[in-house]
Length: 269
Image (tube, rainbow, N blue to C red; front, side, top):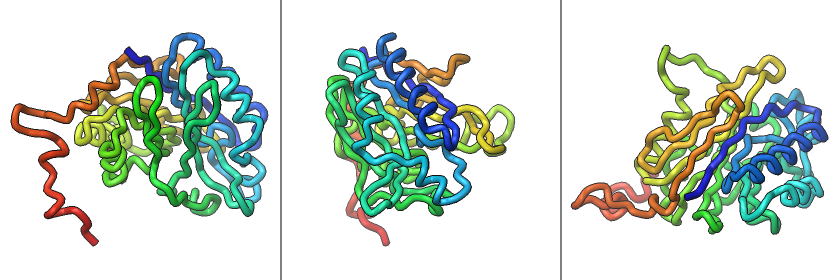
């Protein structure tokens, strides 16, 4: 069995060193406590509510920053971690990025391709689809927040063999009817069910410059049901066999991918 943990953090803009220490401490404590796969929030290094492009740039780090080396050094055993951060890329271009790593180093990098609202004022969109990376626990695809709302993206990851889609997020709180789950969680459930792939969404916590967050962290099983949500300690935990997601048979006569009619809806324009 594989233990997946999502841990909500509350990074703050302008507190890069403090945010970094929080990430290192969380990686060390959570992987030592038995997490095989740990997912942390979007932009965990920088916070989210930037006032200007200049402020965003001050909070960004290059992909080879020593901070990331400290993250990998904090991993216990064979555990793998996904963490979002503000990346300062070549030519000083900023990206909303995430990195997948273990104790040996970085396994995959991803730049968010679908930017939400004011993110477009600060970041450039990525130009590559999410990598699907083999790990000792299964094949992991990395997306970031709004990426999950594009079914073409989640289907692509599933077709490329993903067992788990790990999604660092920052979900702004939005109104919803009493008793309803956050809309982003409903989207994660739909993506999981129509692709038979587990989805682990790690939201952030706290209030930042007046912005309240949903704190809607959820891990969804490959059947589309909620397997875990954040508890009082800000952690969602789920023990599972990720390989179960590889069986795409949904009845004695139906195969989720084999039944597709790409001749009818392959490449609409």
